[in-house]
Image 1 (cartoon, rainbow, N blue to C red):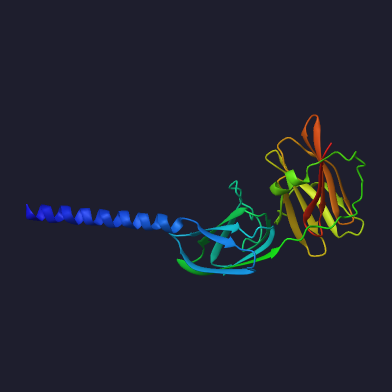
Image 2 (cartoon, helix red, strand yellow):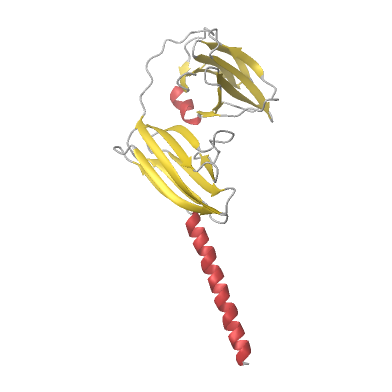
Length: 260
């Protein structure tokens, strides 16, 4: 009887330890908030990740103004790095996953997920540099489409658009290929499960970028042109309405979005 009692106590103790361990793992996975304040330029975060436990962070812009943010994770060969928007979409998929650049509006938040690869555990360093975003100057854009001025939708469409560095498979089928006269930029589209993804190449640096946030199922891109540093195209929203987009490829920003 005494042996059975001791065995029962031992099992109960082991169960309690297991519960504490699970609770600890869950607590460690809760995102920690990193706040960008108005005067701070650089934040450095260090930590350790294992095969069982990752790290999660929320980067929140509390500066009262828009910020340009540059993020770098090291070591690149032992730690994985995922960046996610407020809608849960991965923002750095198919890129150099350990460096990320973005523009954060005041109050906007993005999520970082750090894991370990090729090792049982790894120490990491996350360096976040933030600078005040400068409003783009009024640009002299070519009016290749000669649309009527239309309704200005730039403030509505800009928050959904991200331009990220991307890798394109060498055997991919490129469509709607356009290139500027100086042969410094080339743009093209690729079909992916009914979505027409839009890419452009900076030929001078041999880097490729994807324009995210303008792809719609069954709504092809129309009349793409690449003039000087600008990529201009139309995207149909419905049979009666389209959006005219213009991007400054040199600055990697959207500069026009008008409904017509």
